[in-house]
Image (tube, rainbow, N blue to C red; front, side):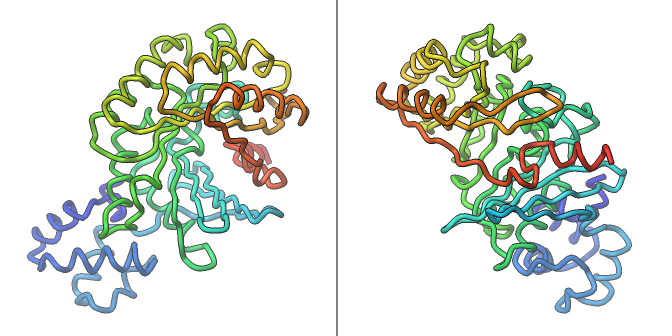
Length: 345
């Protein structure tokens, strides 16, 4: 699929294609500029390319194969996008504006294999990995759709598990990080994983300064296995060991995502277990996230007092804690929610 979509090519790959066509190497930079700097979605508008090259590009490659089918805007200015792939699947992307940044949250797979209890992404099952070009086009759509054609941060936190689609995700990161691509700084790019240990180990050796986020959500094996079946394959002890090795190799802080679910994972023992784990790692922080209520999964948001008591305990332990403000709840902005509603209708 990516062989037919030009956004699936790195700059070096595009240069090789053009060289085979007996084109000057600077044409690759012109094409990248039209796509990534100017946001063009049609070969015909690339006016500084020879006509015969534009014709050949159209004959051999597509550009923006994703179809935008729905956009919803939240009262808090977050926007959710539903895209249709060329094989009839639906995926989601979210744009989250803040005072100094615009973050794009993108999907990496059609559906998800891992069936976390609090997440709607896997309710329709897993279908396939997204290609590099499909993820690039998600990002470009979010950038081009924003009011000032800007995207400052990218997080791989949408539908799917990024480290289960490792090679394509890393290819996307190198394209958007490149000065010839979107030139988004590595430290403004985040991969979120449910805990795929082989992927974490590979990532530690990539030499990238990207952010790593671990979906933890419980600090004991019984509870974590209950809400995250992946824990049965990669239990907490092994996951935390892999995280410690990652920190040692990269000298990079890891963020641990912790979704707070009513009656599941925010009692005092859970807080104590979490504090013990985080203190053992040192270079880390925890991001507390009140869960989005999802009727199909029977999960509920805890009371505000419960949330604050849990946070305050961690703060008193000297830990780096943030409490994420929910965004886009009125437009079903949590992973998989809008896709679920859209495909059911």
